[in-house]
Image (cartoon, rainbow, N blue to C red; front, top):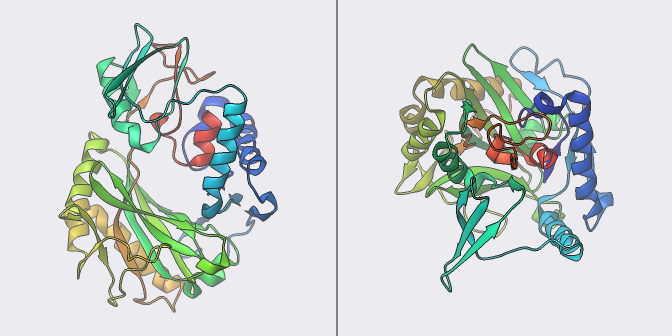
Length: 364
């Protein structure tokens, strides 16, 4: 529920439309979330404008506006938005899975498991916005139709968790803080910071676990924890998507993700009251097995955080891995995001290597 209002992260939106138009489109996304929000007055804007001196010796701090919608309102926003679309003539077809698209016949094939019914849908124009769970399907179509693409870097790391008080002096300046550092072929950033009522969330993608986070608005959920991703962007890896998949598999134990804490903090609870699904390990060897030399960048990042936030010490844990699967980006016409070889098909969101709600929405 965090809408990042900047072209610095989340994908190459300004590459397609320029900086001014990109910002205008992202504001439209924010306005739509406000429009369908049951309590729009509760949306908070954080807009830090100065990098604090205590950060500078160890990290850069990216500063930009972030609109905080609230995880616990997203479902209601979705329902309100859905009702609006239906009332204005949009037809939704549920419980069908699209398994093939014939780009030449302009035909979509969707199947329903119960009963086993096939739905053939023809189109004049097709917007392909499959989200994270459909990246494999997009990759399959790109290979099937030999779409020209450009490779994307690997995006992988861990979800870091600690009591909020260790980070409070930075949170007071920048609620959704972005610490970053850059090397020749690797850059690291803290990602998607959650505070106050902050919970780690398990994602099950391709049969493997990875970790993300969310924050509730309701004070009843307050746990005074902070969690954020520490993500590496690794360039120059051949077949980055396949490399990421193999790395994720190495961080599983019997299909479950892993957790490490130097002070033996136990994994936290979810907002539903269950413990976060993970297997506790007693060292970071699995991280090095999965990421090789790149794992040292994550460990060094954490060590330097203990210098910037001296009360932190060993009072933290990491859930492994956090990953953003980025398939090769199809080449599109910049004026409308249509495929260069199929001008009636438009790729948006994760299918076009966007990361995050605001950029994906703006592409749409």
